[in-house]
Length: 227
Image (tube, rainbow, N blue to C red; front, side, top):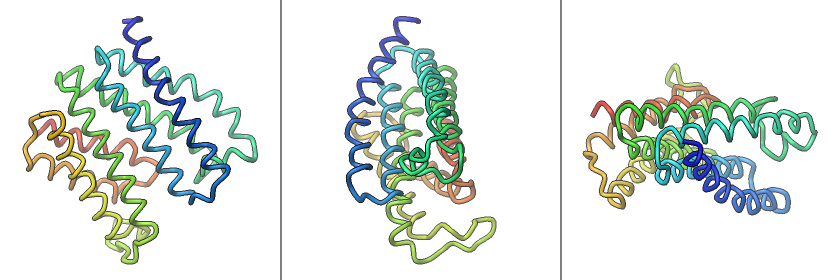
């Protein structure tokens, strides 16, 4: 187990280092919009975990690596968040958001992997759940923020999200699922992917933005396991 976790951790670090080397100079020396940089960070997070699930030897190694990364990064970020530049660099919406998001994100990854792979012996469902959430969430922001002219004012939706962004999330999430099964020869029905993408989109609409990191992939996985 130690060797498997160590190997998984090395692979994850080798992926993260070039991402950090590229992203932070882009943030500091360009005029990239803040919401785009946030989504780039999210993309790094969900792609690194997807790769970890795909290449890990066991679910225990994948889940434990997620928790080790969160545990190692948390005290560093907790110290740095007191610096005046920290909130601007990471585009924090509220004080302490990055630290909370770190635990929710990697804790969710660990739980998702343990349930899908450890209980149902289906690592591909964990991977596709993370990808469908991550890609869908990114496109929801990239389309909804600049082009979302028609807000959704149906309770309990908070009125800040748009039909354009939600449509982009559903379409991109479904497309991601279809590409995944075509590239990996995984057997999912079109109905299950359609339902998972729709359920994920509706969950994102109804969940406060800070917590959709947990709720959306969990709902997508539940649908894929049930169908």
